Each structure stands twice: as C-alpha cells, then as structure tokens.
Image (cartoon, rainbow over all chains, first blue to last red; front, side, top):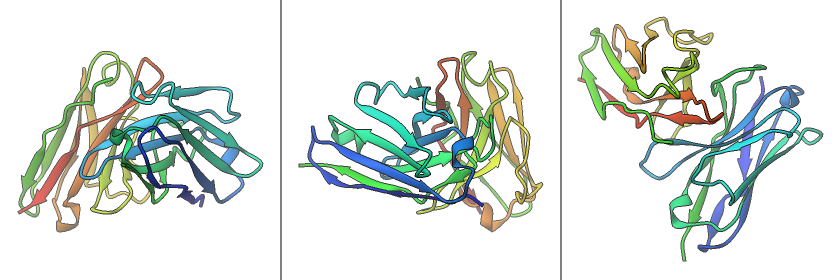
Length: 120
Length: 110
C-alpha cells in the first residue's frame, strides 16, 4: 500500500517562503492526482491545491493562488508545495493526499501532516 | 469558494442512528456525484468513509452510509458506537476544478 510522508514544515516569518515535500512509497505514485490539504489549529480541513499525473495541470484555492506552487517529480516519487509570501493565516498542518486510484475524486490516502507556523 | 455547510455538532446514544447534513450549491454538491465524507479523530489524519456520494471503501463499516438530494448530501451512522465519536467532514468537487470541504461536525456519543 502506498504511504505518504510529508516534511519541510517549520517556523517562518510573515512574507517568507517554505517548500514542503511529500514522499510516496510504492511504484504507483505517477498514476494518481496528488493534493495538498491544510488544517489550521482547531479548525476544519481546507483544500489547497492539486496536480495531475504528469504535472501539466494544476489547480489552486483562491486563498493561495499566485503565492503557492504545486509540483511533482515522478522519478523521485515526491510531491512539492512551494509557499511564498506566507501570511499568519497560512499557519496550519499541511497534509498531502491522493485518491489512491486513477480518476478518483476523493482523498483515500493521507500523510500524517507537517506543521507550518507563520509568525514573527 | 465558500465551505459547505454542516451542523457544528450532532449527538446520539449508543445504538441510535444519526445523520449529518452537508449543504452546498449547484456548482458543487448539486452538480457532481463526487461527494466524500471523512472521519477525523483528534491528532490524526482524516480517514475516507464514503466516496462518490454513497460508496464505501473496503474496510469501512456498513453502519456508515451516504446519500444526496439536490444541493445537500448526508452521512448516516447507524448503530452508533463509542468509537464513532470524532469530527466528520464532507467534501465535493466543484465546477471550478477545485475541491471544497464542509465546516465540520463534531459527533458525540452520549
């Protein structure tokens, strides 16, 4: 079974940048759309972004459009989220997620998340 | 994109049935059969419970069922058990090629 492990979280000042990674085990990573979902402390889930299997199509939530960039390296089985111009409201646990099947419109596979804290 | 609307809390006694609603718009819940439901225990990652409105992943108890009518989807938990106490979120694909989650519902087993 595919497992997802996020890394790269930490403390960053407002206006700063951070790059998150999500390493996937197994040989089927390149078959699935991949997503980032975040959850602010004590708050609900918020969808952030998605990328298709070959990286040619990306979509973003309005709240991060123009600041965040999703990408993937199928040779390394790794998903990325480049976050620029970070704001206090971007503070959250960031999860990578996947439907786990081709053409799935849900999130069946989840990592454990990585915490991003934006504060001076 | 506004979050889908869910009740903040729902409670029930062991063995009872409860239903959680998830109200969206004609641009998300009402337009696609891509509604899914997630269970989240404190400090844990979410777990997929229902997908494509009413399908259950392998390993999920048949006490969980989903349905949709118009712009509102519903999750029903029958035979409520102590282990069902958790937060539940709905999600839908949207006409903007994005996704939206619900506001979340805390389920309490009395």
